[in-house]
Length: 334
Image (cartoon, rainbow, N blue to C red; front, side):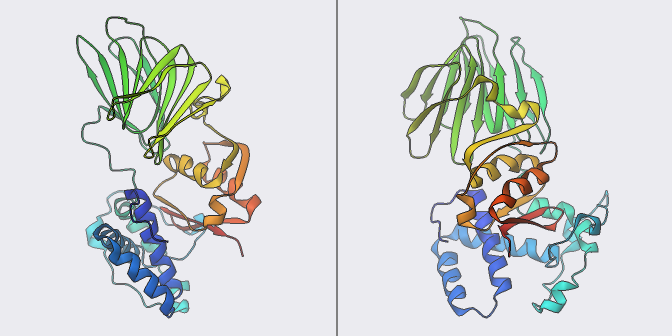
């Protein structure tokens, strides 16, 4: 369970998972000892757990509900006024948790652990979860921004830079040999003069996939070239291990999100959950490591991402529970 160098989103998920486990087994001394070791390992772990506790208080320990039980979200909820002490841990109390609280604190749930509102301040363009946006740039280039994504545009007389701050974007670049076009995504520098390609700033690895033309990919932090000419149907993924992984992909399967599709080809379930998160409100928590490693194949409709998530999980015995309108918990079915 311990992840000494977990990314912020992963650390938040781990903290919430610890809270759920402790609530379900309050008398388990071994579990408490294991939790304390994780909690004390890093200050960031303790801070993540404090935020998880706050979310738990705000939700009133709501158990899994069905959508028809959820009240309407009031338009002017005031999150800070809704903080409520933790209920007792008795199963009877939890079964009768106040479902009306979910609507009153919906905004708090997003602020507590969800990533959707944390838009970088430097962003010139951004999208909400599930939103797609087409953007025309001043040089005639065009891009499409996926859900929960953000970019900053920095053009000068010498070069054209677009910083991908979160999510992913598909670029159709207008040719201008005098001003190269750069997409900066974490350590990646993707340079083109005129082509069409997708860049995905993933949680673990950034990825580039080309539809036509060619791009040059480099690690700008290390000053190292990763691919001199990535061409149509070719892909490159690059992460914290500083290893570039080359691959191929049918051109028709590059950036299927533009057609509201998610394609899995013998993919890890855990990876596909990560790809679904920009289309789902609030927090998605995957609580089964073995389920995360299961392989899935299929084409899923992003217009109904929760149904897509259930469709991925069910063949492997996975169960998706709605703990509130803004918290989905995935575990093995009993």
